[in-house]
Length: 73
Image (cartoon, rainbow, N blue to C red; front, side, top):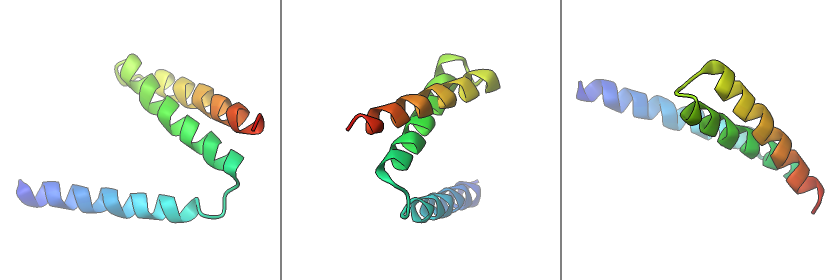
């Protein structure tokens, strides 16, 4: 059981590392859009109990808000 938890943590940290490396060449507006989409997806999933439609809807709304917030700066 402990091995399974450690392997999941290792996979998660590896994925996070690749995501952060992939974001290094993004503009500020792109980063804001991606952050908004991520936060929106988590929020949509939490509010709808893990519904795929809620997750996708939250990501779309969050991405739009993140895109517009950075555009005004």
